[in-house]
Image: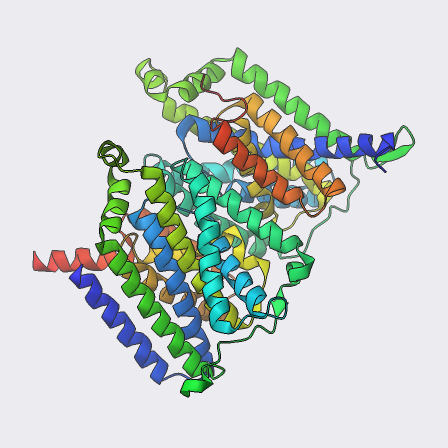
Length: 290
Length: 312
């Protein structure tokens, strides 16, 4: 197995595909974290919401493309409601109230999802693009997974340009670097945070919608992916776009190769990576603040 | 503080009256309430007094349950009292090692590192086939007190014994908080730099508090294993830690009796609501959100505020 080049190729693609899903989830979380020191444990629930809303849209319209386009908007809408009702009040409250309220939100959102969509795993029945396989060397590989990888790279590219070439990007970078000074220089940090929060929600929704045709949608699917996402955020470095990308690659590879080579220790290896980074590079691999 | 001790006495009276009116189902609930009261009080020592909010406390609880089952089961074969002692001390030793590392970071990073250590433990028992893997272990023995005429296989006697344990733990924690060690712990929460300037070894005190709270959590775990006579990796999962944290917050952070009240309320809510609706999680989550947003220190904080308001 270990001397077979196609094993390494397939596992590399699998780890890249997992990494791109983790990236879509963690990038919103990390910028919210870095910009405002706000911890949103319910971020994974928004991923599940994206998958379930995406499923309903795909079933109603007969095309998953509508799901990819509209599920992020719908999840951002839910995010806006959460922001106005809860999150704005918690902004200055410190980490403990934020952790607790968003932990409570996990249960509320999970039961709302169970009420609306039931508890079964829902697979989309319409025609899914890229549903065939592509031969890589001698191995057939699902084309849809390559599509997920492409979406991840496209989002990374888009966010890179947004962050480095636009006014909003400059405000975000200034806010992450030093929110007080940015505010003193006339940046409306609250508004920037709100926009970043919505973008993060939309990306979580996109991750769910894109994952849904491959892994089906299920109420509560966000709880399992939350912890690896938090690990990516801490390993990559709070508030850092490239940190989230590199962190996703590291954790995706740790989980995929760990499961393939040492199935008993894959999870343990991921947490060991988290602890090692917290102890030896507490600001993450690629910290946003210099 | 005396008011809170009075509340603790009142809570004990309520539990004892409840016990006198109960049959099998009530005894089972009471034992569960008392186990979680012990666990929540130990987390309060850490989070409420020491300012160290851990999302890995249930992992130490679960470790205690596994250690008891392993030491007291056919694999090692110690007697039940020795297995309980071993589970308590063993969990305390693991907590000391984890704490020595974890206390080097603070705030949200402390929450993350305890989450990481806790999930490592969860994964370890989930994957460990010799200890039942994700199916867990059945048929765990209870302590045998037939020599002194107490039959712990009787649910009523068992519930009473666990309540007694909770009382002992309450007194122990209240005593520890009144010692110089407790004063240092509270000072560390309020102003660590000042204590450092006084020449105290901040990390060592924090690690010691983590180890002590961990040992109490391990003790609670060894009782829980005897109560349900079944253990599984979900005991260690971070969501269980979150539930214990809810108990602490619901009752009142840093009040000692509050978390015990929180354990009563949450265990009752969970059982009563889950028989009425499938969506008890949403009710519990919504309740937690309301308590945090009310900016009161839980039920105890609310009660004390109302009393002050009445006195003018």
